[in-house]
Image (tube, rainbow, N blue to C red; front, side):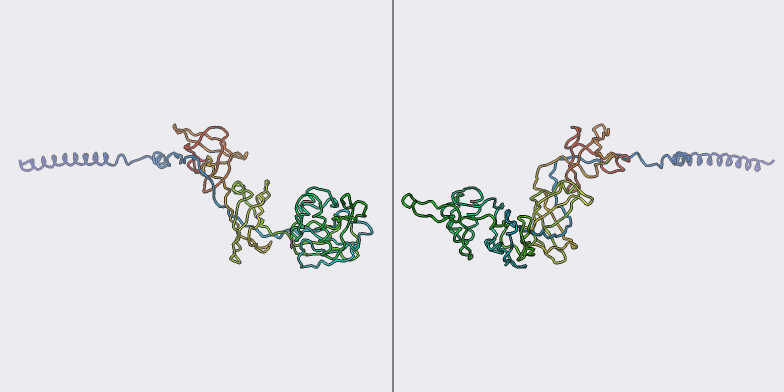
Length: 392
């Protein structure tokens, strides 16, 4: 082999060694770079799992819970008022001999609207029915109320609570102004010098002549008694007067019930007519039915016409209670199958404790809570959101 050939063989051997070293170096470098990115299937699944959920919390706080309560209702007519015969006006001689009441006309205080056995029957606005004949010298609340009624009707009758001479004169004028002789009874008190003279009986007010009215000017809507009707005291209906004032009937849910109280004001809107009027809550049911708690409202000014099949918008002002209460976000309260409710409190050590609470008013996304113990107060961190609470 020539010297030239020997040199070429040696160069090839050197390059072969250098190539092998270079390949090894590249492989080593690639392994160093790509090695951390290479994972087994099990390792890839484990690393793809979501991190353990961390609770999202909010602080409990004391706050005033008020907001308008919005619901719908219907305008209902009031029930008709029945005017019955005075107690004691009964029997075969208690026959209606004249009936001047007419449907569609108002019944005013002091108006004689019927006669029974030729004697007048009229109405007075009184807080209670008369329970006795009013005769000279007697006193009591019934006398006071009659004196007030006589004054409303224009009589110069002092309100003394005693059936005195002034009251007798007012009663006498009342009957005569309506074309009737005044009933009389008892003996007039005479001064000593005149005691020998015969004294005419003094005017009295018979209870069978008076029916009680709750207010003046109601419209007569029915006249059941007619000429010839034989009366049986309070069991006999003489007249029916217009329905009482219309009311709004609405329902609220348990959360809204805590915000509505008698005396709360409200706005009632008939969207079809574009009319809004004022109302006030009269009653709130203590027990709920299938639709919620019944609320009755009375109009305080203009009245919307009744329409049982037509609903109106009712916006009730919250109860006037500015007392702060312990509250948490609504999403912090959970329920158990037994109906109890609880919140999950997260301590400083991140430990979680379920605390049973009673809930109250709800407003603005917050709910009043009363823990069964002093387990937490304002500032306590409570878990909100189902996923953040570990699946609770």
